[in-house]
Image (cartoon, rainbow, N blue to C red; front, side, top):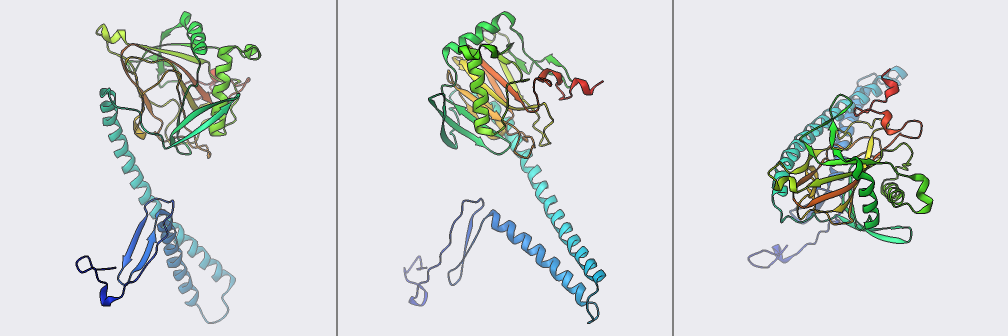
Length: 377
């Protein structure tokens, strides 16, 4: 390369080197004297590390073979060598994976600690705008096309926003059906039941979906069918409506705060397991939250461990799933909360969806610990 001071190449000769970038992470280009160029990324680093382990272990195995006599290597000698080679690779990989897991745990703790601070900041700053999506797509359903914004698109942790998901008529039908049975919202109590908790201050009511009226265009059945069709479109879960939870109308009221009471809100929580363990049959795997009425002040939805803040719009839906294609649950990226409602009302419709339920094994045959009643007796 030309000198930065003289603009001339060394010995008046310039050299050119090339590197091809990739779509992988941690890309680095090294330029050595003589313009020798090397490129690496996370995948090439992993490949290099595995090749180094195999090369080392192969050398050890080769030395073991050569340590014998010059006569033909016996079958038992060959088997011993192969066993040693396998043990060498296993031990080397075990140590490398242990160190990687230690680093992952350390970074996860930092992420969660930062998320806790970010939670309070973003809820308090009413001027914070919604996070930007990583990708925008469209979804066509019943001759209508809706805009879908991918906020997070991991295998076990998806967060999407859908514009104009629910109609005013569907919102009115849900509110009318819910109002007679509204009661204080509850949370799981840790013993298989539920309880009223300060972590969740709102009113709620379950609404059974009248599937027998779907063919005649019932608004609640129409809404629920749209929820399942979208869920299966983006996840491939192939969930059916049979045995699922009721639609839930949840209402937060700003006048409680204006009267001097603690504001209605929902503290950070996971809708299903978010422990990185295998999914338990009959437990939740996805959630759809649809906004029918939004408050004048407050009421944003946020996923603090993913750094995602969503200011709702009327008719908008927030969808998130929390199990991967391998059956392993999310590890906290879909933990979410509802910021305090300070003025006006927030009225949402929520559908929690489960995998492994059906007509014979409905959702309410499982307690809040995920244990089916028939298993307890």
